[in-house]
Image (cartoon, rainbow, N blue to C red; front, side, top):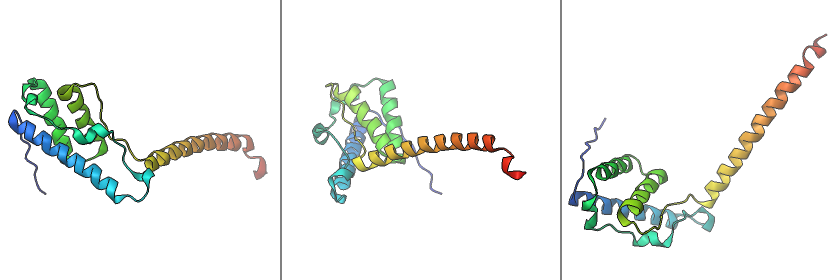
Length: 145
């Protein structure tokens, strides 16, 4: 098993790593967009997402915010998921850009539809379990005589 070395990034190395991760996220989203056939399978992002870039003003972050960013970056290095990417983008927009625009990646329409139908199924299943229990209590030993 390979061990992962965790290094804390501060100053200019934090800026370069942040820009590298932004480029990776943009590449991931672009690859997802190119690999799908229909429009409802695409990830949804705002147009401002493609222009997002971090400059050296990030070195003025407080130590606490730099630690938070390091933690988010480590999470992204472990696993690229929409959840971690949105955490990263939220941090960049809130603490570094500060222009009031929130940029995030939405799941595709198809995935949203699947999740809605799953919730409906779970609700119906729970109702069916309650009705089955009431039926069995009512029936009791009536047919076993």
